[in-house]
Amino acid sequence: MAKQFTAANFETEVLQAAGPVLVDFWATWCMPCRMQGPAIDKLAAEGYNVGKVNVDEENELAAQFHVMNIPTLIIFKGGKEVDRMVGTQSRDVLAQKLDSYK
Image (tube, rainbow, N blue to C red; front, side, top):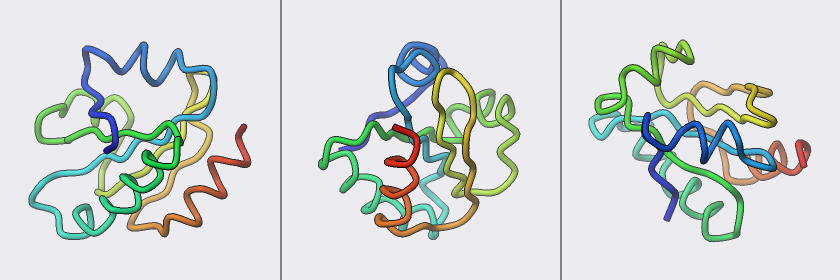
């Protein structure tokens, strides 16, 4: 299961992480977001550092990172955004991108 990122843990869990972190900005009512979920959970089960931000509950985080559409998937490394994808992505594409930032 993917981690749940909130304003309370985003700094330590994402921005201060040693390696790349994939953050899925999503909402429960968003069908493409729900379709993206299993790929995110599979990556988490495989040991990748991935998690989700519910934009309805964490709208300040979504605004901070200029998330205008969901799902938006952002890879952070070294406290900075290094990649951004909007729309659903396959598990393989996400794994390849995460591996490229190791």
